[in-house]
Length: 373
Ligand SMILES: Cc1ncc(COP(=O)(O)O)c(C=O)c1O
Image 1 (cartoon, rainbow, N blue to C red):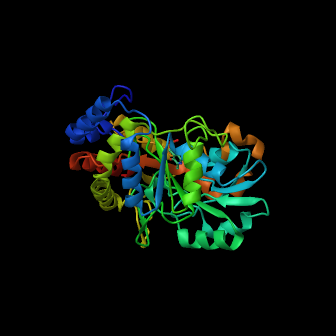
Image 2: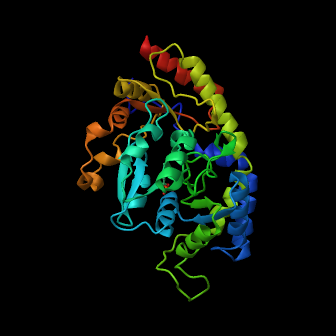
Image 3: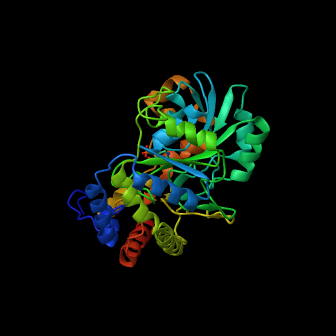
């Protein structure tokens, strides 16, 4: 079948269906904001921050304009300065690295665990130098990082522990929600996330009142009150419309994550007999399946085969941050991050989301099995 003419039978993620399920409530929430005359830093933002903090199990939540800003404002609020080092996973979205580089700090990559694809705690301590200020584990694909081991090293070495929870809304590690496990956590509400807005958005959660207050100042021109500017802040605010939408969606997050778990269970079932390397499911954590990522040496051929069959897939990510032009100057040796190097060429993200039908899942499984046979 010609790739371009194949009708898409299984989109990677259908956000229109997510809206359709909640449209009455979302439209009412939007209408409420439009009629209120308050569009920035009003009651919806205040209510969402409280509700999201409660959900995560953190004392404070400060909403901001994006996940990158959430990471970056914590880095800034912690006083990380030019020349300081921030340890990051080699395998992540580029934002984790940019949060460090944008204050002039140096992102120092540590390779990921070959099974879970999260920062390998056994490699962490060797990457710490006298300049290291912070470590930023990423709960990539919705899978919690091995936090106890990382927290142990962070405590021993005096590092601030910032969770990048942009892909893991609702996940749990040893019973506790991610986002409550370090000094602070950064969240993204980009539309495709497990908790997604209708535009950009982000948040910081933390138990540290002083840190929360600093981020609160930084996100709003460094001003504790109008026209009194104490810090060289920025403008990075979640708006009232997005906050109102997120409040509706937050009520459905656990249930939608359960549905993602059912999709994952069906993939495990259907793909068990294939040659694909399936994701590892941690025994002490609750994965929320932001992405279902399989691994195969025949990744490109499988992706083409599925595209021809009308199945949209993704690659998260085709080029690791150390291979991006923006980080060429760091001179990271590819051999120093062998797992990440291999992943770039072998990973494939299958369609997943709360609105994938049984029929669609069955079709994806069937097409993958046909590829293998
Ligand atoms: C792991 C990770 N960190 C940070 C971000 C940045 O979030 P945003 O796109 O909202 O800036 C994303 C999302 O894109 C992400 O996947």
